[in-house]
Image 1 (cartoon, one colour):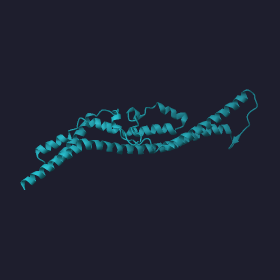
Image 2 (tube, one colour):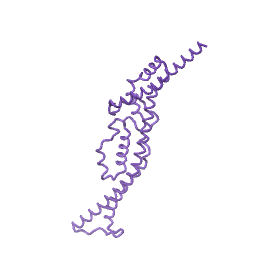
Image 3 (cartoon, helix red, strand yellow):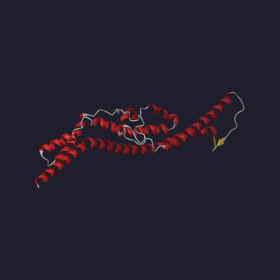
Image 4 (tube, rainbow, N blue to C red):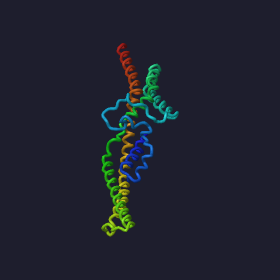
Length: 245
């Protein structure tokens, strides 16, 4: 899941900052977040509130047997620790409380993932600047190639040539065409470094946000019911002590 965030950032960053003559090829690559249905209805974009009722299920792979076993083990460990030192009746009640929302847990976790802000709408204003510079360089290349083509056409038609312009000892149209292309590729390479740094940061942030979202769900569906039973036990114990005194 978090790997998809990094891949999506790299793909989108490459499209925005890459050399336009070559970057269009990346459009044919599938966006990992869209493929997982995590980039719809504004999901993954920063906004004040996301209504969970308006978000459908994601396309994350179904929970495997190994994953289910790990979840069961974690829930059982939590229940055993909470029930430690209690009588069998209270211990069984705590274990049942820990599993009281077992059927709803997968769907709630899925919705929590779908509504988590993946922080992909920010931190990319510089992409727009790079994109403008890239298209200016493309225009430079087009002007240079057009200049060269016109010069060849005039020579072919045996018409008077264009005024000769030399920059740094080289024909100006060649400087525009070749220099623009090289500058565009160099700019794309430098931007790629920035995109990679951003992808790693977004991956780490997404991992942190998703863990918090899942922890909130498990706290509500697993931890809180266990705590409620512990409070009931404590209330009953105190009442019994008061009755004995």
